[in-house]
Image 1 (cartoon, rainbow, N blue to C red):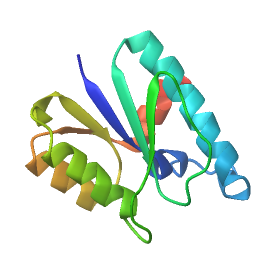
Image 2: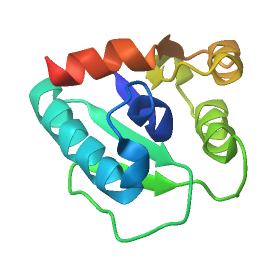
Image 3: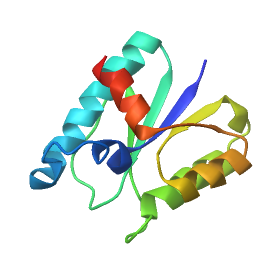
Image 4: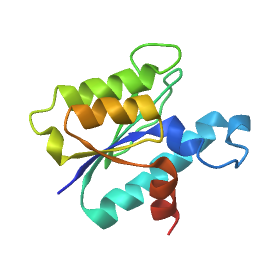
Length: 123
């Protein structure tokens, strides 16, 4: 079983849907899509978002907001999640951010591009 960690804003930003006009709405939409994916795949899914936390929860997806603020805050949290894991080889990180991809690969995780994963969600 693969454990997924999703770079939330990276996936949301992978296509120009006008998400920037309703950032919380785009986050909710992604969490709903991830719930469907988690249910269909039967795999653990976590998503980490940049930005100010708000009430966004799920029974099937581990929804997190970056602990820090500023550029790459979620990236730092995602990298730490992989680096601190007892079995990083069982994790796939969803991102198209080159630096984050390098960091998590170096720690032992696999990487799936945001666009590729988005197509899988939409499929």
